[in-house]
Image 1 (spheres, one colour):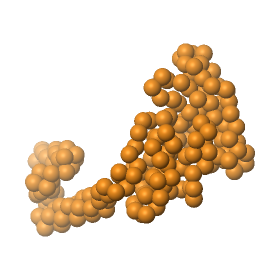
Image 2: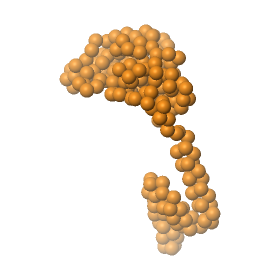
Image 3: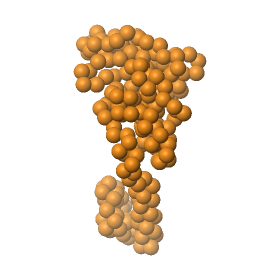
Image 4: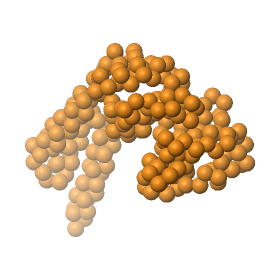
Amino acid sequence: MYLRYLVKLSTIFSIFYLILSLKNCSGTMLTRSVTRLSRALGLHLKAGAGLVVASNKMSSSASSSLKSDPVTAAALKLGRLNHVAIATPNLQEATMMYRDILGANVSKAEDLPDHGVTTVFVDLGNTKIELLHPLGDKSPIQNFLDKNKAGGIHHICIEVDNIYTAVESLKSSGKIRVLDPKPKIGAHGKPVVFLHPKDCGGVLLELEQA
């Protein structure tokens, strides 16, 4: 009876060891972990080896999916962080929090019909926070708020020296999809475009003319 508990305890420790080893994704450590786990569970080593091979293939595939592009990099030359945009279900309440509780300087609300949003900017000195609220029935912000009832970070905006050159370079490279056919005038009266979040590490990225 005690022997059975010892075997189970050994199996649990082996599983924890495998999880810790996976954090470093080291082929050697992963192989050893799978080997120990296989022995503890009474599995054949080849099954564990197959897992290692599959893991290595996935890692190799992920790392080789994106290659450097000096031409596009030279054309974009990302500059300063212009703002972090936060979608909010209650623009007045969010504005009061930043102004009346956190003591920040905030702008007046401005409607942007072309973008389907109402914006308020919070001045942080070296950058800004853009508060976004849906404007109109087809606002793209509404979809985000439907999934995130309390609101949250919607996108980040980074400046570029020449947005038209940047857009053409991105379209030519085919590495990052541009969501807008051409730049639109944004909240600061300057042209902006959005890049597909699936091509930007899960982040909706806005480029704005510096």
